[in-house]
Length: 328
Image: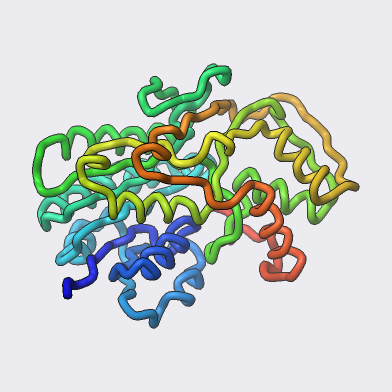
């Protein structure tokens, strides 16, 4: 009987990482979470003690810590990052060193220890401002309009150059849609989550830039994509980039508000403001991840909105406006 494969997940205590840990453990992998614990570490309490799980506290910029953590690993899932425009703008130097230099450190250690697969997360916001009549596919020219997107694209380009050969280690990059829904490390600074929070608390919602487009996906679905990539034939995922989401997940901001009013809050007052200072507007094509990996969105936007309302209505988060639920 072969031993379980070992996976290191950087950023494992995070909003997406919390779901990834649980999915990979359920799939039979031995999983080690590597995280600096910038935010509330309570997200790890539900997995501590599970067979096959371990935790290492560390910073991805720390070469010795990363090198030690990757010894004996079969794969690494690199999620650790300063995520979002606000968080990156608050400390640009930290954002660059974590998102770019941290990726370089992890990639070098992966090569040194002959780790098979390095799965790294970029962002769909790399497409920035696009002609929304056209779906942006993986070959569409990128147009980042934020430090966050610029740093993630820089990390992508590094991996493409550093791991372009036919060595033991190869990369797979996912560009995820904007995620939403409950997580063990909850965030309310993401568009759907904060729309639902504000609608629930105030019954009013002012939407700036209502005609701008965003691709959206449930926060648990990136874990599905990661599992599929770990199990895929290397020929399918070697040194490949995949948009992560589904074509049905492309929504205008006003559509999110209308779903909230028509399905959940009939009394909701919708107001549409002027231009949003966040200029991103893009629709994304997810055909590649569907045809190559068999990925499918597993929860609809409406289902996830219901989950967030249930979370709020039952007091599972005492103060949803607390800074602890925001990256920025």
